[in-house]
Structures are given as C-alpha cells and as structure tokens.
Image 1 (cartoon, rainbow, N blue to C red):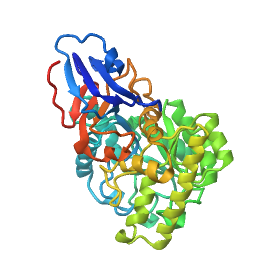
Image 2: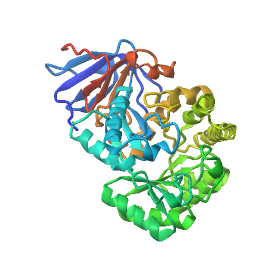
Image 3: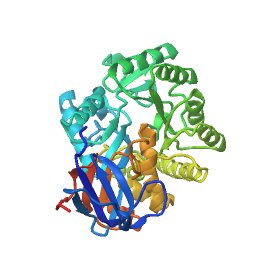
Length: 424
C-alpha cells in the first residue's frame, strides 16, 4: 500500500491521540511521506516545508483511523446461518467482499481483522488492497474457520454428503484439528478462528454449550498454529469454554460472554484481548421478530447481551484489553453500521467515549499485531487519520454520520471524506 509523498498539515481541531489521554485543544497534526512528524498544539508546529498541503479540521476532531477487530468481509445480509454456505457462488461473494472492504474504509475504519471468511477470500482481498488494486482497510486475515463436528457451524446433515469446506473445516479429534490448521497455513492466513462454544442463534447449541470443541482439539489447534507463527482466536461464550480456550493458549477471545473471576484472571495473566461484539446482540433482539427468530433465540440474545455487557465492565475495570468489532453482515446488523457499536458501548455498557475510542483505535491495532505502526496519533507512526466535523468526545454518535467526515487517510493519502486541500 502506497504512502503519500510530501507534507500535509491538519489544523483547527482537537486531537484525540488514542491512548485514553485527554484531547489536545487547538491542535495540529503534521505528516511527511505518510508518517506522523508532529502531533500537538498548533502553536508548536515546526516551520512548514514549501508546498505543504493544509486540511482544515473545521474545529472538529482529529483522531486515529478506527479499527474493526471482528470483520466478516464475505457476509452480506445473512438472514440465517445456512445462508453462509449456499446463498451465493464464490464469484459473487468475492465482489460483495470488495464492496464491504470499500465501505469499511469510507466509514473511517482504516484497519480491520477478519473474524472468518468464505473461500479464503479475505487473503486475496488483503493482497489486492496492499497492491492498491481496491480500496480497503489494512487487514489481518483468518480465512475459513475450524469447528468441531456437530458444533455451532455444522448444520448440513451427514447423509447429504455435500461438505462445508468453503466456510468451515470440520474436525473430530486432535489429529483432524492439526490437519485443519495446516490447510490454513497453506491458505496464507494470519489468524486461526475456531468455535469452542455455542451461541444463542442456535437453540440446540446455546450460549452455555461448551463442547463444540474438546480441550484436546483446542490445544492441538494452538500448538500447530503457534508452530507456524499463526495466532488463534475463538467464538467463546460459555464460561468453561472461555477458560478452556485461555488454558489452551488462545491469543484472543471473541465475545467472552459469560466471564467469571477465574476466567478474568486467566485472561489478565497473558493480557489476552477480547472482542465482545455486543451491538449484534442488541440488533438481534430489536429486529429478531421481523426476521421470525424463535422467542427462545431472542431470549438467548437478551441473556447474551446482559452477560456480555457485564463481562466487558469486568474486563475494563480490571485493566484488560477490549477491541471493538460488531459481527456485521447479517440482515439485521448490516455492513456500514460499524460505529453503532461504539455509541452502544457508551449508552448501554457505560464506557466513556475516550475509553471506547481507545478500544477502537489503540487496542484494535495491538490485536492486529500492528500497534507499533498504527492505532494512535504518535510521531513515527503511519498517518492513518480520521477527521470529523464535530466534537466526537462529546458525541461519539457523530462517527455514524459519514457526511461529517472531513477526510479518511491511510499513510497520509486521502481515501474518503469531503476533503479539499489548498496549499499552505
């Protein structure tokens, strides 16, 4: 992915660094050749080189590009889990994924981590983005997911003999777990996504159902993945499933819904991050009747939302690491609504806007393994910047309104927004 050449300064706004520190009023950001060279009060700007371009922040907010830490590029208006492996052919899914990537960038998300992708498409999307063939966030890939036979993602009857390898690698035992990881190594992924526990979306394999994968299978996945330099994460809702994943050596937890003190201690011991995806639960409750969800499933989502919110409060209070990512791509929770998760964490979960922004920038970048490059506005990092017309710290809901975006930048290059750049 190319960086800008020359210098650009953003003036006339408050700067949110992304570390949780208080905003810097009347601030400026200077970038040269795609990297940040000054962040601070506008009065302290160094002399500008001839030809430096200027962006007026309009008295608004200058912040790091956002990070969507649980992103499904190949999900598109999924109305039932079964849609995932039969709804569209691979060619059309690839086009849909490219559209979702572009949309994420336009929504201010300059980086994202895959939470699973059909047909290994996310690996090729990443290559296309990095070669400047299509627009999209800086990306960490996971490709196809691993699930135990009979688990949450195994819905096709055995007698149909149709397989599900475009979506899921089904395993039965540690040897098959190792084999599945090796297939993903060949695919070129960075994260291995697994399904240790159930979900409210499947009443027969609900949130408290732990054994979608055995501990031995999970341990085999981790040992093999780590041997090849890959990281492992998992869809973990049930309490014992969370603890099994952490004991097996997982590098991240998706959802972490029903935490207890022992699970929290295991998480904090290795600083394992969690991406809760709570807005998905809220929308499942709100729009479930519209999509004819059984009441038992809606009730499961209610329990999941309440338990997940309490777990997030526990993690945040204890100093753990949370990322923001909302499981978007379902019909009731569509792509493009990413910032709804951020507002939801303020209004429902009770986080402060600065806490949420830290989760959505600094923590997200660290979960991607790129905290040294992106995620905060600090000198030396890549100039991935979002400028919003308005005070995002006072009203984080402004991030839902793309018409308020002055500019979205990657490596100092404008990629979206209402940008005009008069010479300084």
